[in-house]
Length: 92
Image (cartoon, rainbow, N blue to C red; front, side, top):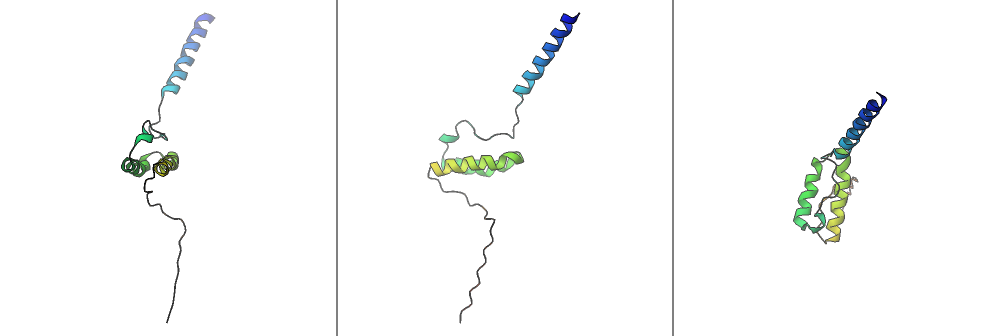
C-alpha cells in the first residue's frame, strides 16, 4: 500500500514540475530569436510594441532594443526626458 502512495506522490510531483517548467508567460519576452538580424525599421516597430508587454518587462525589452539600435547605427527613438528645462531670456 505504501508503494502505491509513493508512486502516486512521485507521479503527482513529476507532473507538477513538468507543468511548471512548460508554462510560458507571454509577457515575459526580453530577447527574441532573430532580434540581431532585424532592420532599424523593425527594431523601431518592436520598440513601440514593447509597451504591450507586462509592466515588469517593458523597460528591459526597450533597453535591449536600444542596444541593438546603437550597435546597428540606427537612429534612436525620441525618449521623454524626465527633466524640465526652462530658460527665459529678456533682452532690450
